[in-house]
Structure formats: C-alpha cells, structure tokens
Image (cartoon, rainbow, N blue to C red; front, side):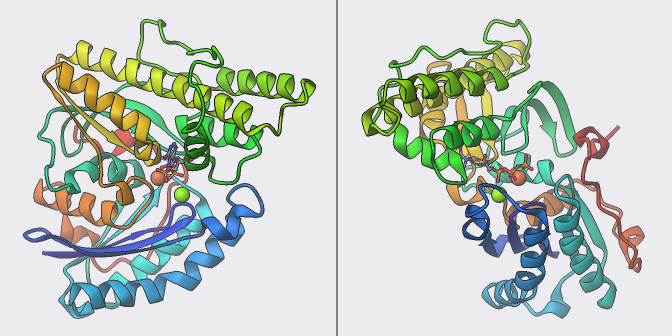
Length: 348
Ligand code: ATP
Ligand code: MG
Ligand code: FE
C-alpha cells in the first residue's frame, strides 16, 4: 500500500511517500525558519500562507522522486493536530481535497505520534516495548510505548518544554532563532561547569519536568554579566550557553534513566527536535550502553518536523490494523485539533 503524508503543524511543510512493504520512498521538506527569523519566532499567519505556497510543488517533487503516479496512491495521511490552527488547516484541507478527488481514504495523524514513531524509520529500528523521551519545541514527555497506539504517559513538563528552554535561553543570550542549535553551537566553546544552574525537579521522585526556573536563572546570570560589562564577551557567553545546555541535558538524562528503572526496560527512544542535540545523544548513548541497553535516535534530519514521520505513522497504524480505511473515504469535510491529547489515539 502506498501512502502520501502531509505535515504542516507549525513552520515546516513536509510531504512524503511511504510504502507498507518497501518503507519510505521519498520525502521533501521546506523549512520557514529563514522567514520567521526576523520576528524571533513563528508568526502563525505567515506560516499558513507559506504552507499554501509550498505544498503543491513539494507534492509534485515527492511523487516525482518516489517514481509514483498520484493515481497509484492508496491513502493520504495528514497531521490533524496538535499545532497552529491555521497551519494545520492548510495541510488538512489540501490532504482531504487530494484524497476526495481520487476517492482515497484520508487518515488523520497525531503529530506527536509521528515524532514518537520516527525512530522506527532508522535502518536499525528499536523493538517494542521501549521508553520514549519526546523532546520537541512544544512538548517534553516520557512515555512507555508497548506498540503502535499503545502509549502510557509516565511524566511530562509542568511548564516550558525542553526545546522552549533552549529557545528562550538562547534569546536571552542574544542568539538567533531557532535557539536550540545556536545555543548548542555556542556551548561547544564554553565550560559547562562555569555556572551552577538549577536542575529543576531532579529529585522530585516523579518523572515530571520543569524548565521555567532555569530560564529565570539564565536571565539572572545574563544580567550579572551585563552589570560586569561582560555581556558581549564571547568566552563569558559560551560559558553560560554550555552551563545551560548541561543543566537541560542533565535533567533529561536523569529522568530518562529513572523511567527505565521504573519500567524495568532497557531500550530508550529519543524523538523530537531536541533529540538532535549532540550532548544529549552522547550522554544517553553512553548511559544506556552502561546499563546493557541501547538508546535509539531518529536520523538527524527527521528529528524536527517532517512529512516522513506522518506517512510512516500512517503506515504503522495501517499495518497494525488501526485504521478503518473504508470509513475514511469519500468525506471532503475535515477538522483539525490544535490541542489534542495523545491518549485519544491510543487503543483501548
Ligand atoms: P511540537 O512537536 O511539540 O509541536 P515542534 O514541532 O516545534 O514542537 P520540533 O520541530 O520537534 O518541535 O523541534 C524544534 C525544537 O528543537 C526547537 O525548540 C529547537 O530549538 C530544538 N532543537 C533543534 N535542534 C536542537 C539542538 N541541536 N539542540 C537543542 N535543541 C534543538
Ligand atoms: Mg519547526
Ligand atoms: Fe513537532
């Protein structure tokens, strides 16, 4: 079965074609990062308009690269939420129309399920069950994953997401958008022990996170640097960046290990944009190896938003018998869910 998948929940337009037998055939992505950079964050209306501009050419490109004709497709998958309402509507509207015109089933996919299952796109894919650390721009969650559609939330952030902590700290450091990769780059030249920043909730006894206090601590340190006339000093800024990164990575790693201990599992899967962080990857790979287990990461280019993970989630749901294709056919009406709990797509 051939499935085309569309992602448009935020500032990336992603399209991909996947096959239930042959895996991912092609994917194409347009990131709007450059467009939003001047504003220091995503401007929803600009995002929606750009999705409209990009989605048709990207669809043509992907079908071309996959060597697949549109009339050979068997189903259409799209991100139905959570995300920016206007941005979601573009992808959902296009996907539904594309499906309806060809009398194909249209499969709504939960964006986080896409992130969560993206490590299964790697050549060496993890086997169920595993613990998943989902660390993206809007979410920080630890989950027990027993199979497709079988997700149990173990803990999550009470305030900012890990990606937000990176982005907001980067902004305080005067870095560009998105802040995560920039902060990480600056941190390479810094000393992670220069500032003893808080590790919020490290010993809270549960698997929840909190990152808003860290942001305040970074602000305080930055003000102190300003007062000392060192705010522009590259070494001082690198030290603060490295200390911030170390604090975030420490908490994410410690809580992931606690989740493994609690579940008795030895497989950890990391998904979401912060999963691209080199220090986090190295730390978790090493910790899991020491446990006699293993950490899995999505291929770097599939950590942040993309269409491949949406097409792939649909493939896995179809293979698991979790989509009733006939009932998803012939309906041009559609809705999106800007807020949507992952539990809603779990099997009972
Ligand atoms: P969500 O999926 O929760 O709706 P999102 O789709 O915006 O949010 P992603 O695209 O998965 O999130 O990830 C984006 C986040 O990842 C940003 O906060 C970005 O700063 C962060 N990020 C990307 N690369 C790195 C890196 N190397 N180090 C740290 N953070 C990073
Ligand atoms: Mg993005
Ligand atoms: Fe995302």
